[in-house]
Image (cartoon, rainbow, N blue to C red):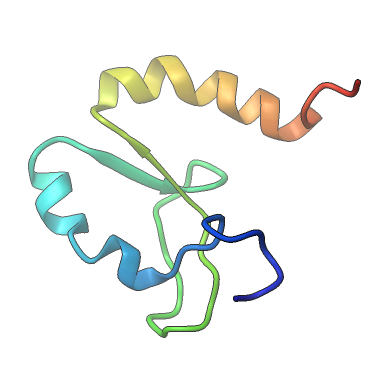
Length: 75
């Protein structure tokens, strides 16, 4: 555990099926919408986002990025 609540930390090995997913049309990016890239170890936390396909990414990613920039609503 790296200081995150249980279940909120993932590692590079969590994306072990990435090639299979991409071949099926899934789009995986880092938390900024860039190609996923990180050290392949068992301790580094890795942020990623998965979209079922490119069409859904086009619809969801702008909203997600806006939310991440401003943060959750207070109150």
